[in-house]
Image 1 (tube, rainbow, N blue to C red):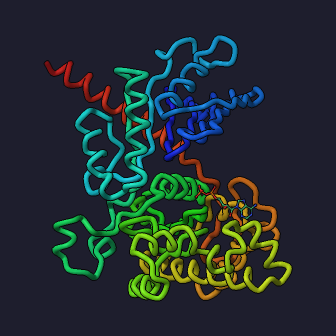
Image 2: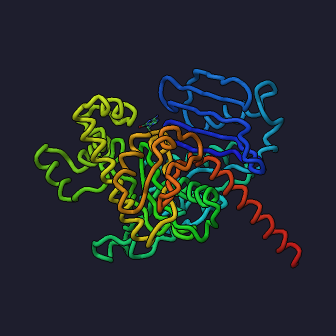
Image 3: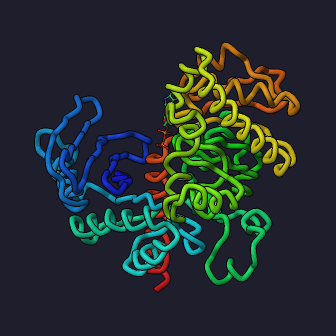
Length: 411
Ligand code: ADP
């Protein structure tokens, strides 16, 4: 099945066109700076060079138009008409309590996603814009919403409730939702395959370490705990996000710095994390690694605190899982930072973790980086959220068309 995957940001729209039967990328690209000056469209057909076009993109609708025009272009395109696109898979950040699996997007589903904007005011409205643009440009096309939160619907009550009055959960849905679900699921499945184990009888800790970062305990194919919470601010220290802090700190900063609550939240989201900890040296682990190796105190402080916090989460999650078969590292930092992986794994000796220094240094693609003696296997597994969206889209469309055929036959 040929699936167009759409991943919408507030001023960007990433897309990938995938043949899901072969896990093959047919074309991919990106629209940037939508709605502002400096609009840009990048496109690459697999096996051909990249095309870059500077073009004003007033809105997401125009971005979708240019993508579809290019995909069907006689010279640079990959299909002769839009009919050859079997389905569109949309990444949607927040599915709330409502969406526990990928869902075919109907007008009712779209309304529900819009309602969930209350839980994700930055992300869901933008996702809705992408869906509406696709519906406008490809009326009647099968569309599927794949939710960042859905994989975590299996969290038990004890993991998703906060220690605050229960009435707030009932009235406002204040609970842990968790994010990066597509990545955690994809990496956990891959890890089980790499171990030669059944996904549904494996225990894996997935560390998704990117700019945003979260850790998930996956037991028998189900997420049973995850570090991000009601919003993607909770959990481990990130590029610019603080991760978990004592909530009283918000009051203190507001009072001392004479700032509003909104301003403090902005600081916790944009000026904290390793960026804030390094005294604003950098939010990028590449820069911090270089500085760390040169003995820069700000970088040492930031990376030591960052990795220490991750170690604590891994320890907690191995306990929650009552032992784990594997720990997997993924996303920008997890896949690429030899130093971060080493700083973390060196502190996990009490769990019997032992990494192979050479394997860690040379890791590329899916790699086992622990020694044969290690009690828990440690892997690097590149994540692929778009492929995960495409696969889930194709699976759902196939499942629903089988259901419909069965209903037809019954009548
Ligand atoms: P996002 O959360 O934005 O999707 P990514 O998963 O792409 O983030 O991760 C981006 C981060 O990965 C960068 O900010 C950088 O810190 C880190 N990164 C990328 N390449 C390397 C590398 N070679 N070494 C260390 N860190 C890296």
